[in-house]
Image 1 (cartoon, rainbow, N blue to C red):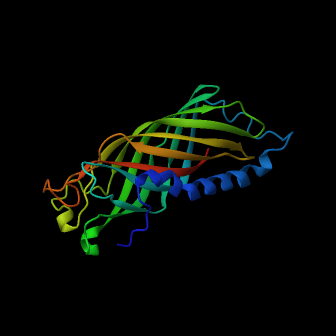
Image 2 (image 1 turned 120 degrees about the vertical axis):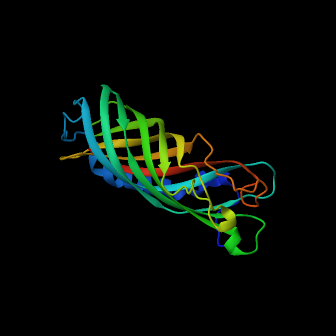
Image 3 (image 1 turned 90 degrees about the vertical axis):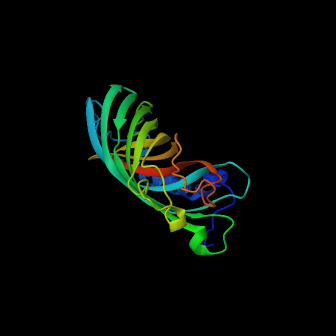
Length: 244
């Protein structure tokens, strides 16, 4: 069917090993020059402003988590690498605590392979999604160590899926896979702030997990595509590179 995913969605973290390795490699090269014993401190007043602004660029890999009514076989997901871009607004609450709003645009594509079909026209559905993400996050940092500072980050948000097809009258019988346009989610991640001579650069790796069901079922309750799905939820991993 053209699907090369592993058997179950529970292998999501294993399949994303390459993304983790990419992240740690980039962090290593970005920070190699920053870990001197007695560095010259850059941007010493950078974190003292009550409000800070910036932007981010990044990569993502989105997946689906399926919940089934019966064990009739798994829907396979072939994931691809997408991209992220967005803005950052940060409010300083404490020396080690910041409130952040990071609206952004996330583009991704997933290909679904449905069991029980022999014709690829029926078995394969390409799901292209363009998410507008509105997360409200708390960033908890350690004390600054020379020109770097580790942090963890997490929070909740909502996403608007511009490619959801929610309002489409066609369903899978006409080749259209439908999802809800709005979904709530939470994010968790960690990263490192690096203080360069001219700006603060922060690579971070995040996990995003939908809280609500996104599936718009087919018109036929016994549909061979959606009839056995009780819930569908997006989950993903992404790397952001922020510049402040």
